[in-house]
Image (cartoon, rainbow, N blue to C red; front, side, top):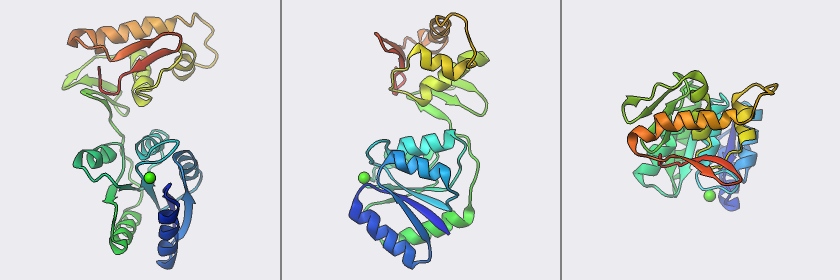
Length: 225
Ligand code: CA
C-alpha cells in the first residue's frame, strides 16, 4: 500500500517515512505543497498525509485543488494548530480526517489504515468565502440560505473567483477559464459579467466581496466582503 507524506519538517517527514515503512507501507515524501499536489495527482496513493502549514501551497490549498481536480484520495490532515475551527475548515475542504501534532505514532497508523480501508469517496466540496457559498456539483451560489439565482456563465465566473479567493485574476485568466479557448470576442465581456455578479452577490446585501484590483484584474475577498 502506497502513501504520500507531504511535510516540510524534514526530520518529522523522515520519521514518518521510517515508521510507516516499518508498518509495511511504501512511502513517498514531498516537502512542499506544490510537489505534494503534483505527486498526489500523478500516483494512485491509498492515503495522503498532508501537513497544514507548508511552503508553496498550504495543506488547505493542496486539498482543495486535489478535490477540484476530481482526485478523491483519502486525505489525513496533520495539524499543529489543533483549534477546532482549523480542523473543521480542513474537513470542509475535503480532508477526510485529521491528527493534531504531536501525535502518538500508533494512533496515526490506525487512522491511515482506517482511511485506506475506506478508500476513495467522491464528495463535492462546497466552496466558501464567509457567508458566500458555491456548490460546484449543483452550480448554486448562496448568501447564507439565499439562492442567488446565477446563470450558468455567471456561476462559472464565480466558481473561478471563489476557488481562487484572495488572488487577483486578470481578465485574460478569467476569459481562458470560463470562455472557450477560441473566444475571439471583446475581452470586456468579463467586465460585463463581473458587474452582473456584483448585482446579485454583493449589492443586495450591502457587501463588496468582488473587488477591482487596479492593473491586475478582479479578486474575491475570502471573507465574503
Ligand atoms: Ca509544516
